[in-house]
Image (tube, rainbow, N blue to C red; front, side):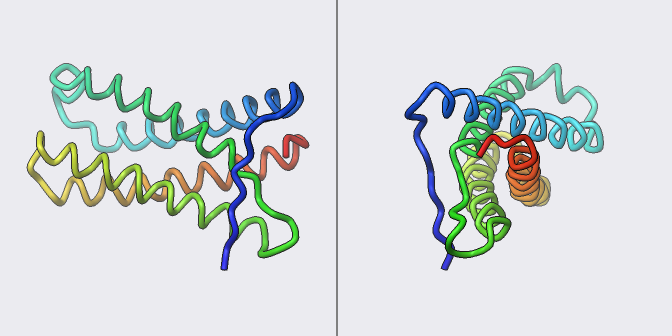
Length: 140
């Protein structure tokens, strides 16, 4: 069983470390999402749905800080297992919810299933890379 600790920031040092972890996660999320958007490149997508992209990228900020508050327990299961489990759960919930809502606009399940699968992988990889970068920079 994987135990996941979500830590609130109780001191100025924890605030700084948590904010830096959030910025690391945000940079990975932006990178993965820009790569994905580049590869799907549907003509007229940005001009027709710009308001959706603005809301989507703002939601990446919330996802990044949800990743930032997760700190693996060192006594139980391996830290990478905890981080991957949390990333998978977070990605599944967020991108599952988002895909169901976007279905009202696009009505194509094949696009939404690829989008949800990408999102789950993106959040998981972002959580894992954030953990490795944070551990290397002593931000945990």
